[in-house]
Amino acid sequence: MTNFPVEKIRADFPILAELIRNKPLVYLDNAASCQKPQAVIDSIVHLYSHDYANVHRGVHTLSVRSTDKFEGARTKVKDFINAASDKEIIFVRGATEAINLVAQTYGKANLKVGDEILITAMEHHSNIVPWQMLCQQTGAVLKVAPINLQGELIYDEFEKLISDKTKLVSVVHMSNALGTINPVEKIIAASHAKDIPVLLDGAQSIPHMAVDVQALDCDFYVFSGHKLYGPSGIGVLYGKQALLEAMPPYQGGGDMIRKVTFEETEYNVLPYKFEAGTPNIADVVGLGAAIDYLNAIGMDKIAAYEAELLDYATEKARQIKGLRIIGEAEHKGAILSFVLDKIHPHDIGTMLDSLGIAIRAGHHCAMPVMDFFQVPATARASFAMYNTKEEIDVLMKGIESLIEVFG
Ligand code: PMP
Image 1 (tube, rainbow, N blue to C red):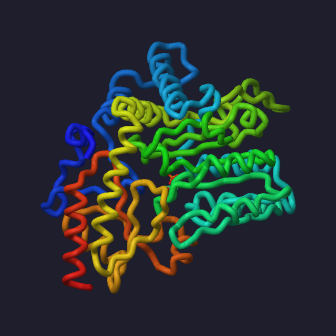
Image 2: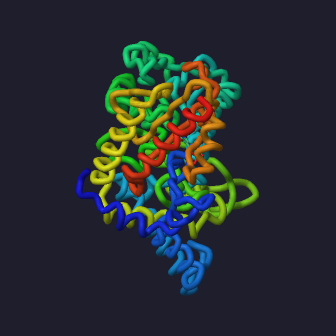
Image 3: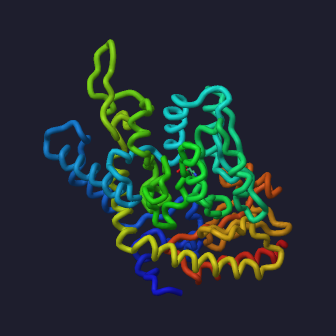
C-alpha cells in the first residue's frame, strides 16, 4: 500500500471508534453517505457558538462574520472544482435539487415539443425523474444510451443518439450502483461539437478524484456535501456563468431580488439569483471545512489509495465462489456491487450488520440498472479514504461465513 496516512485520518473521524453490536464498526456505505471528520463537526459547533447570524443583510458584527464564513466557503468550493468565479457556485440542498433546478430553469426555458434530453442507462433516479417531469411539461423526449454487461456505457451508441434534436446531455460521472467512471471528456467533446450543453452528475465522483470543471469543460456539475465528508442538506450546482446568467430563477423570495414592487421584480446578480431565502448557513461552513480537510490530504493521494483498496477488494471478491460482481468496468471508482447465489442482498446486509459491517443492500436508486442485470437488488460495499485492507478482510470473511451457513 502507498504511504497513505490512513490511521491518522481514521483518528479524525470520531464515529469510526463506535462499536456496533459489540464489534468494531466497519463502515462501507460511503456511496450512500460519508462520515464526518471532527474538523467539520467543530466548524459547525464553532459557527453556532461564536459567529452565527443571518447572512448578507445585516450590518452588525455577527452578520458580517457569518457572511464572511459563508462566502468564504463558496470560494473554497470554487477553488476545489476550479470554477472560474464564485458566481458559478450555487448552494442547493444536494445533487438532487441541483438537477431539478437545471431542469426547471434551463430546461423549461430551452426545450420544446420533440426536443431530446440524452442520459445513460446507469443513471441514479435523480438524473432520470427530473427529466421525465420536464418532458411531461414540455413535450420533450428522454433518450437513454445503453450500457454493456461490464456496466460500461456503449459509447458508439451514445454518440449515435446525439442528434439535431438533442438539447441537453446529462450523465453520471461515476455510477453509484456500479462504480463505473464514464468517459466524460469524450462525451463533452462530442456534445459540444453539436453545441449541446452537458450536465455531469458528480455526486459520486467528487469524493474520489480531483475535479476540474474548466478542464472538463462541462456546462453544469452537481454534487452533495454529505458524500464529500461534509454535512447533509447542502450541495452545489456549478454552472458556466453565461448559462446561469441566461437562465430564469428557480424559486422566488428574499435574497434573489435586487428590487421588488408589486408590478415587477428585478432579480439579483449571480449566484444569489438562484438562492432564494435564508440559506443553510452552518452546513455551507461545514462543507468548507470538509474541503479544507481534503485539500490537506490531497485528492490525487486519496484517489490512488482508494484505487488500491478497490483492486484489493475486487481480487478477494473474485476468489469467493458464488459471488458475482455487478459492474466490472475498466474505469471504476471505489464501489463493489455484488450478489450471492441463494442469499438475498437484504439478508446479506442484515447479516453483515450483525458483524458490525455496514454495507448497503437495495436498488441504490438505480432501478433500471437492476433490471438490466436482472437482479432485484445488489449488496454494495463502497470505500472511502478512511477504509483499510483489514476492513476488507473482515468484509470478505463475513461474506464467506454467510455462504457457509446459508448459501
Ligand atoms: N446521483 C448519484 C450518482 C448519487 O449517488 C446520488 C446519491 N445517492 C445522487 C445523485 C443524489 O444525491 P442526493 O440524494 O444527495 O441529492
